[in-house]
Length: 288
Image (cartoon, rainbow, N blue to C red):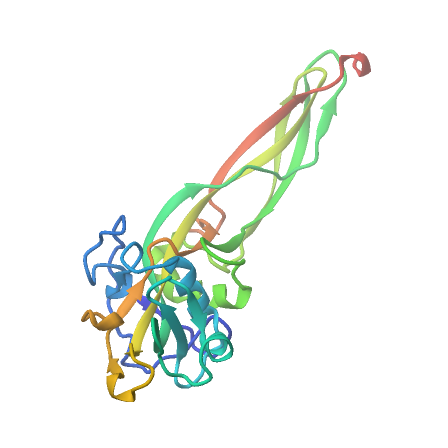
């Protein structure tokens, strides 16, 4: 397991200093009571321990356009409300300073692989229908074709952009998933096969792809964390370098993850899956 970063600045994908996120990923635990530092990329799960919807907070925090100094967020520790830097400056306080229950933070986002598994995709029809309206079995040659598919989906927020999906799942993750991982390795086939068609029946060929899922959890590395319970005095301003001064600086929220899904490939590069014959009865009135 490893922590993955994108290589160029773009929305939802930030660059960090080369040493900041050189972390070793571990398998994610199950549930909000996960021990500190035992999550993907050595991150600590804050879901269930901090106020508000932390899944959505991490999603919105890391969806911001990045800068050379990172991404910024503000958390109201009384209500759990989260605001981006622009929202905070417009709605709460015109300066980037914590006031009252609002605590501010700055850092970097990355993507840490947490798990991978195999699954079976939905069957798709890969040939035209051929019908037999006679009273005896018929045999026909079917031409079927298929090309592998890849896609990504998020558990929180809108759909993931194609550019971000490519930056997360191309190359690095493929190396850990082995030859079965077919992300952006398009493969296709065209086959001819003879099949028997029963009387008053139409037949088509279906393909059920075998797939690999790679799950990553977006993580946030804290550079600075600030609070000030007395806005009338800057002497009360506190700046630390861990999440809410708890001693850990890499966090994630267990319920926010991104899944990359790709059809598997066989060692010879061909799509891996199962071919089946799909039969449907025709209207008896139209048959001999």
